[in-house]
Length: 219
Image (tube, rainbow, N blue to C red; front, side, top):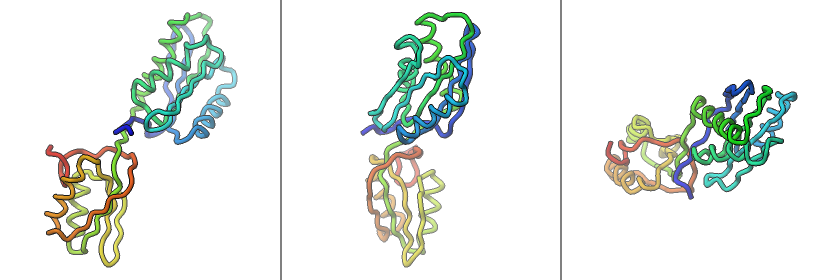
């Protein structure tokens, strides 16, 4: 399983013009193929007079689902370079639709490949991406006396504190990179005089946390 991948925080649009042809790239984060197809259909409705609405999407943390369409452009000149750009940038759970309004000047196969791949690359640069890292879900159970300091230390160093619940004891749910679990366990034992309990759950992907601080690698 891949340790990390990039995706989008939100959808957005970027446009370029090449030899009077407009290339409008719409990007969006998606979780499923159904969501990707819905986004593609929506963009097509927004540009009903465009000559082409080409698309590409990549789903799965390992990129196991990949699809592309040239939508009438010469084979391999639109959807494929779009898909290649997404894969090259390690993008996952993302869909790209490039709408082309023909300007009357033919670009040739090479020109189309550069245009479609290029506008996706520019759109990613303009909109920005976020990194999702693989981590273990973990629960820290600690007494009320020590809970405040433990939580504050976790938040102060950028740990992924996902939930805090107060009952007879306090439970703090966090995300931990796999490689940092031994160091975190040692830090927790030291910080709570061995009274806290750390339970590990399943794996997920989330925003990366900086190394260092409670149970992390040194800065």
